[in-house]
Length: 426
Image (cartoon, rainbow, N blue to C red; front, side, top):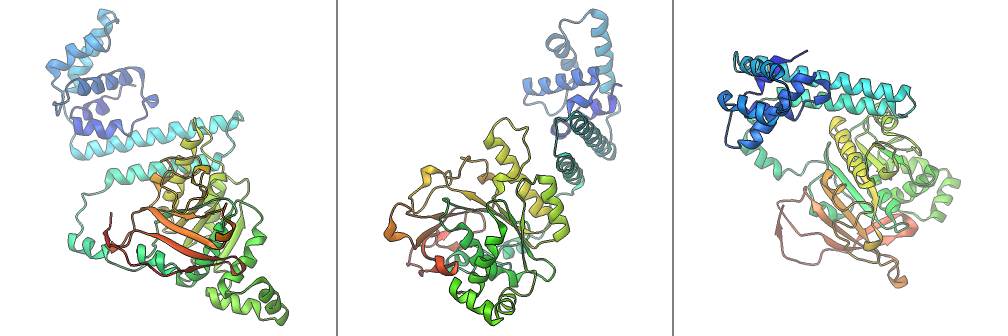
């Protein structure tokens, strides 16, 4: 069926741009699709036109879009174009048309997903449907949002607001504001260079800062989860394994650990090996965490329809960031530093495994844990840097900091700042 109201809405460039970004042309009938394509070509050809000049559009369309059609069919299109120029929808009707477009997209995409699932081509039914529904909700919400009108003074004051979850390491807390719900960061290191210990060191400090009922959820996708718990206890209590065993035999270990992290169940570790994005979101919904750790996020299955690995990972990291916003949780994703970044104190922004820019674009900050892995005498040294830091304080040092890695206690320890030049926040 010809959607004349949709075509009338495309009469102005502004409305066409809104519709063009939302409409799935596969949901349109043949004539609407051809006319919609013609409108786009018209605006491309006339970049200074804010709306369609129908005296120009009719000959342009017949000459450039349907030149091979017979005269009768061209006449039909000509009459439809004349109808397009009448009864331009008001603002309320245009909003309703856009919402109808989004609903048609939703029905089309859900039908395609369920058909592929029925044919055995799709395995992550719940995850794909959830992603499509989230996209629909976002698009509908954006279409209904009013113009931003917040008090600018309040926004400027908020830039200096230090509220949020603080790091154990003073060097990190001095470099960025406190972490808040919706913030998404990447933490990367070379394999077996202390990434798990770093998380244990920091998370056991952060756990007490989160609201009651909003635990830390550690989604483990790299090795056995049971190996993480003793490291958490060591980091929380700053003890060696020998001391941990002694406390267990004395019967004091668990009470001391729960006191250190703010109570039982404040850090929950779950193995998600082989899980897909739908299953992972189900865990998040059930747990209601205040902070989510995706460790290792690259191993979560999803977006297998992407043509390249880097594109799949880009969509996966964007998904993780969207979940942080949706569930008002801090999110930290662990990744690996590529071979090009090995034996470097301060690997660069592009030194993430399987990504030059895709992963990085989804995060607020990228924390790199550099190590001189081929230098045995520097085995206890690590170097922290933030090649991307959208949470930087208004005046702070650009972080390139040497720290001590205490492997025996799963702790990272500040060496203290070296005086340096202050830089403005990005």
